[in-house]
Image 1 (cartoon, rainbow, N blue to C red):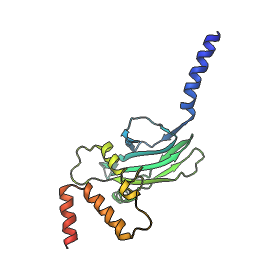
Image 2 (cartoon, helix red, strand yellow; image 1 turned 60 degrees about the vertical axis):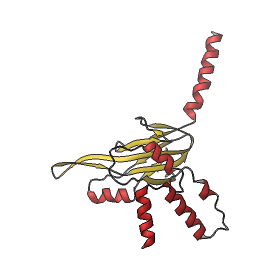
Image 3 (cartoon, rainbow, N blue to C red; image 1 turned 90 degrees about the vertical axis):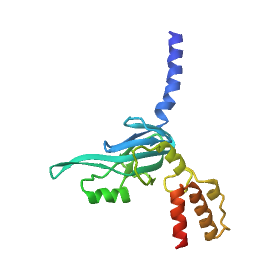
Image 4 (cartoon, rainbow, N blue to C red; image 1 turned 135 degrees about the horizontal axis):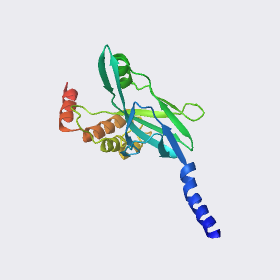
Length: 199
């Protein structure tokens, strides 16, 4: 009997930190998770996340009928970063039943994040954008690249930008940022960039 009690205590001590030290994030059915903390998302709801800073990438997808026709909407990829601790969080998305509201969401996604007390939780949001035909995308890789930039909802900043001191002029900062983005661009984008400068 004593041995069983010891085993039960050991199991409980191993499990209890995992049960208590987690965030549970509930999402609506229209929110289709793509990436969670740099990894391909699994289909679970609520989503169990570690305490501290977390980042999710998702798409708003919705199918509905309008004027007797089936309409399918898929938004741009939205990035959302927030910090939490031992609580249940809920994301709420607006209903998008018209082209106008869908375009407005893509321009500036209206997202609500609340804790278990219904209190608004601060978060940052950004978007993973890619030009051209998008049959398949490596969103995990895109997220990693995005997180090396100073854009909203990014987890990190590039060293070249982080090392900028207050003594540098705005022109110096702008120059370094332009160099950074130019180095990340493909040949077509670089050509467009040069054409704009030469105008």
